[in-house]
Length: 323
Image (cartoon, rainbow, N blue to C red; front, side, top):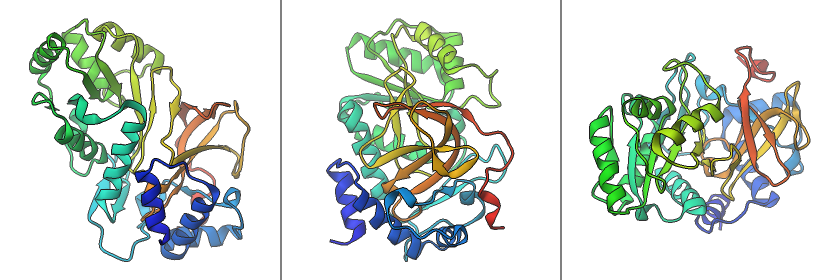
């Protein structure tokens, strides 16, 4: 079995990644992803163990083709581009993404087919190339409920649907971008304690910025729930981390978070110390599985992590190695 088959099999089995599999992934991408190989070579690092693997700054998805396959991509995901050039993530096999988000959700919440899936994602629906829309559309397709679907700005219809599903005691996942959930509860309130509300972030430029705790408090009051779930993902990844409502995220087994020193991207910091978030995502086998993000976070001793902010607009060290 070759490296790619091993990684896909690990996702299928929801198997925890080990250093051997991580090194196999690095070896494949170093040989096949030109921009990643150039980046590693300029750092003059000889990788002999998993801890020495460099992480590619996420900005390169905006300026270069980050691609490791020797075949034409099946699809391309793009970011919104609200902060400049959009990121472009070329996906060689959509089925690997489907396996990742399906098994990732199952790890935390069970089979998506058991839920009515209601999606309030207007900013994503209004553009093309969203990986989140592709994931949620697949969730809707897998759902056994005829009431599953997207709601652009149809707040009246969404409220009526929620009331019907509450009365029928149907398990419901309402997944929404933060500002859209707040827009809905500005108009309607509902007491639906069994509702699973999952926010995906996304407030910038839409409403006044508030803290995550303030956001969750408002959503809890508006929907009559005790907690708000969260999803952490991005265009440049094919896996998602989830929070059960306490602000701490956990990864599926084939995804791993490391926290780097903000002043030295090649050094990690201990648990409990704020730093930059590095992500290993083995589902990214055909692009780059080792991503240095612009998010700031804290790792806890139980392997959960928190998002505490973002780097400012200055470029992260390492991004200027190549034009």
